[in-house]
Length: 316
Image 1 (cartoon, helix red, strand yellow):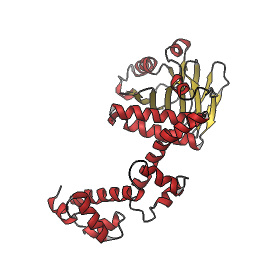
Image 2 (cartoon, one colour):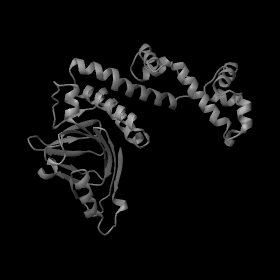
Image 3 (cartoon, one colour):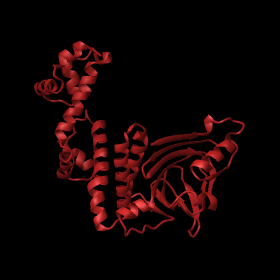
Image 4 (cartoon, one colour):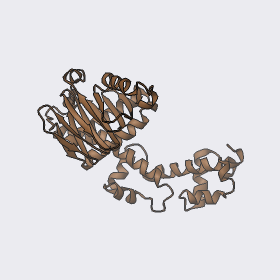
């Protein structure tokens, strides 16, 4: 896996724009025309098996994919997802369209085109997937390209997963990268609209993985919330309590065991952190969401093989 970073700030100020334009043409297959002399840009690119994810932020500019550059891109579907700012784009055989946050532009990357980024600063997430990979999973798929789509729940699930994967890709082993790339392709198939068989596969693999990842992140953010429960989390994610519990069961765990394990890890970290030396063990446990101190003590000892007092005495 390659993780590339292109930043104008890293280049010689006297040749910054020219050097960045050359790098963009070689790597992103785009010719860039800044709209002011103080052009700035920062792009982070994660290259996974059959998936490329880029997060880019830049000042006003025009980007042009010439016929020569388009011929070098391959037969991919490229998603443009504005996170802030926005752009207008026109490709051959397509009308000029505007794309703003909350929307997605579907780009056949082998087609030349021009995009204008006028806002003072625009941030866009790009996801590129080979069309062959999608057709192999859903042979009848024929997505409508060169147009803007609103961010449906399926698109939002894909975007959240892509952003998390972009952040974590550099730390994942090859087998996990391969699996995550397959999950992302599943989510794209669901967002684009798949045949029934492909949809069932995607729902059972990519969508489940992405939803479980989002739920675990939400749990982590609300560990100390007294309202935290399976029904509370299920309602926040628009699913049934039964389905939420089945997601954890398929991972060989339960919702309550997962929450308890994360809270125990939080307590363990704080017991070995000098910044919490003035707090009692009971208070640390209560703050982490445990309501029954006797149950907490028993579960802590079963998990770590020592009492909370013993762990605190050992120090960091």
